[in-house]
Amino acid sequence: MSGNSSITLRRARRDDVATIIAMLADDRLGSGREQLEDPLPSSYYKAFETLDRDPNIQLMVAEEGGLVVGCLQLCILPGLSSQGASRALIEDVRVASHRRSRGIGEQLVQWAVAEARAKGCRLVELLTHATRVDAQRFYTRLGLKASHVGMTVRF
Amino acid sequence: MSGNSSITLRRARRDDVATIIAMLADDRLGSGREQLEDPLPSSYYKAFETLDRDPNIQLMVAEEGGLVVGCLQLCILPGLSSQGASRALIEDVRVASHRRSRGIGEQLVQWAVAEARAKGCRLVELLTHATRVDAQRFYTRLGLKASHVGMTVRF
Image (cartoon, rainbow over all chains, first blue to last red; front, side, top):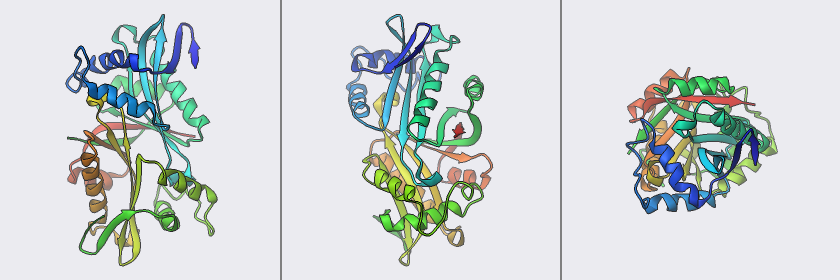
């Protein structure tokens, strides 16, 4: 769908799910939230099927040499504000730990921003944990601003 | 759908759109983004139709004495992280300026959190502008934490 050097972006498939979960789990904050077992808990596949048929959602992976090395989920959501323009929410951005600092995350986020714009969005938003200072610097470099406070509640 | 004292929450209807836009526009940040004309630009109605048939989205209004005095949009989104649990995004929370500090916003947000929980979400998230200190205090009181930085780009 998009690519430079040896990175290709494409929609995630069911057989990418385990690799994506491994990336989500290989993270200071994610490790406590995921259950990385073989076989994976069926809840992951059920969620994949739900999001894969959702027309608002694109779960993308970055592939390098036939291996999945990054992911990003883009949701495009209708709403009344900003004269009825849709907005985009970026979530679950991850790059495999051994493949960082090579522009993979940048390519994923730039794709998402361009895709949101092409779909008529006037706003792209994301939440990044307050302690992820490197991530905030990364997104700032890509043109996003730390304009908001991201508030959450977990059950 | 829910109520205490004289406030009732219900799904927004097409004939609420002008009142909702008036609330979105009656705001320091929103005033520059909306176009409050009579008749309203058709983009608002088009967006309403799109979100109204979207199974992920509930645009709610608070009604008091037959008048719409508040609104909130809840999106419930599938995703792989947190073992495939859905997450909820709250957007466009507004209370009519002459009806603030009477628990209307609280009722809307509490409904959204309960609804997200009932739908199996493990996370509720929202972005509030960094300058909206009162809003941050309000959400904190309702159990949300300022755990994240909300990053945005507008086109």
